[in-house]
Length: 88
Image 1: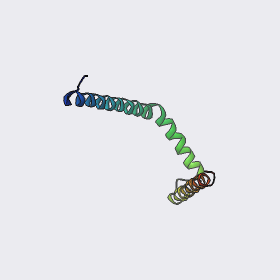
Image 2 (image 1 turned 180 degrees about the horizontal axis):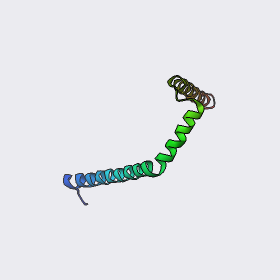
Image 3 (image 1 turned 90 degrees about the vertical axis):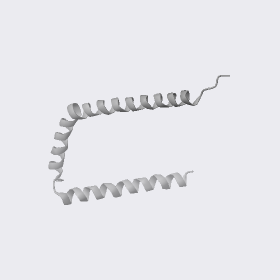
Image 4 (image 1 turned 135 degrees about the vertical axis):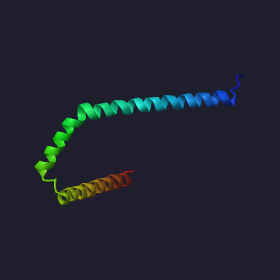
């Protein structure tokens, strides 16, 4: 029977934690590079054109659209919950 002492168990946990943190840093760095250099500028131009075309550059119009979108999402969630209760 092999017995692990506390130092060995803590070292394995620490190593796993360091690996997860390094992986998260790498993913965040790649995401930041993709957003800043590849996706960000074209998406920003498209979003600006869409906002101007739909007339959402006025705060009241943007607020109304946000409210309608919120009500639609809540209604959809309500339908999903209701259907899961009815067909369960």
